[in-house]
Image (cartoon, rainbow, N blue to C red):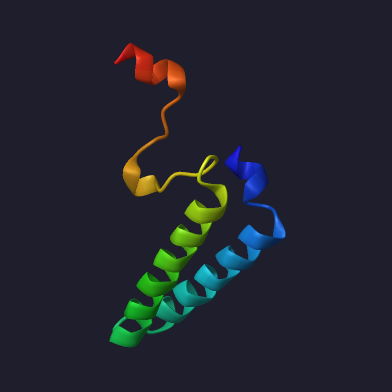
Length: 74
């Protein structure tokens, strides 16, 4: 489901913000403000995606999403 979500305007704008922060970090990775801003933007993007698409998106840090059938098997 998420590949379709990642192409809509809301998600595209978020990923563009993250890409800008990433480019700033890559251009001067030793500057602490660039690193801190990248982390801040990444957290904001994660929170916004989770709030808007919680049923279709999970944080990659949480591992792969499980389906109802997988949960029954455990």
